Amino acid sequence: MRLSYPGNIRIVRVPCTGKVDIIHILRALEKGADGVYVVGCLEGECRFSNGNLRARKRIEQAQHILDAIGIGGERAQMYNLSSADGPRFAEYAVEMTDKIKEMGPNPLKKAKEKMAA
Amino acid sequence: MIVAEKKPIEEIIDQVKDFQKLLIAGCNECVTVCEAGGKKEVGILASALRMYFMNEGKKVEIDEVTLERQCDHEYLEEIRDRIDKYDAVLSLACGVGVQFMAEKYFSTPVFPGVNTCFMGAAEERGVWSERCQACGQCILGETAGICPISRCAKRLLNGPCGGSTKGKCEISKDLDCAWQLILDRLKELDRLDDYEKIMPIKDWSTERAGGPRKVVREDVRL
Ligand code: SF4
Ligand code: SF4
Image 1 (cartoon, chains in turn cyan, purple):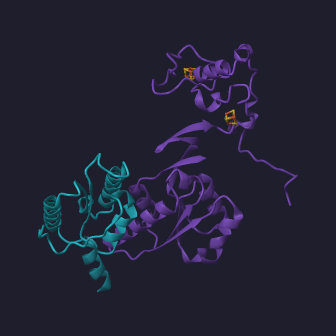
Image 2 (cartoon, chains in turn orange, red):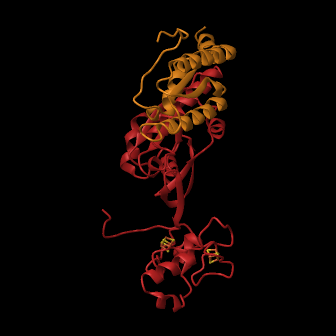
Image 3 (cartoon, chains in turn brown, yellow):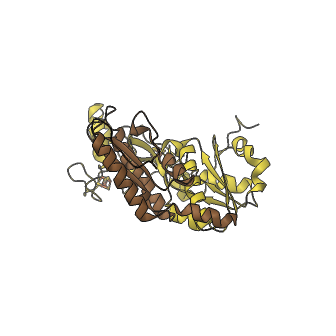
């Protein structure tokens, strides 16, 4: 299957989305990413039983923090798909890119430039 | 263990917003286990605060450290050589650790990053509940191993009260009546006769009501 999805996405592989922690989401944004999203298996289909549910909770916590510090909770998202569902993967990539484009770049970039000036 | 909860990030920001060099200090014991103030929480808070200050256009340096314990001199001493670098410490230890830090580093402002809740047990992942109020005169031997001081809303020594209904406490239907638990376990232990014994008035002077407490052990003092 040759599917195209936005090229500005950097994929970080993890053994299970249960491995993703709040700090990973925050660090990515701290380092300048405009958004971070986690793509996990369908709920109820985690091989390790609840890794994707844990991931969702962590994303929710990260969203709360990001809202509180003025970065925007929407910049972190959780998606679920079946691992065989390539087209859905591409769809989510487009959806996330559109969402972030709408929000604009990570506000820290501008803040950093201002502070350097 | 001592159970604590993270303070809302908004409250933490409000406490530390005027400082330029901050040390966030976690503790490796109870607060790590109840996921409120360990190394992980220190990392998350540090990252969040760095982003917050950067976004506000403020230059704030934030360092992270997690000490083995904050309620012991030897571990708190580990930061003595660099404490002067900071103009405030945000401690994620329980209230004991925060205070010991404040006592030791007298001229450095210290702020609490958690709310210390109680001494309790991890009932299940994400659920902690109170088990002991450190009354200083343990009576668990007479109450089938269930503490009426911490678990009975009225701290009754000869319960239950008239409000005990279907095993639940009258203050909430989600709360087990401690005296029902005691009775059930006495029955299980075949010790129901003990229940008939009237418990004498407790000496509350060893409890917090008798003022701040101290344990001095000459046998282990240096
Ligand atoms: S009787 Fe006192 S020391 Fe014993 S568990 Fe209850 S509060 Fe704690
Ligand atoms: S119902 Fe039970 S636990 Fe609640 S106050 Fe009465 S005796 Fe104590």
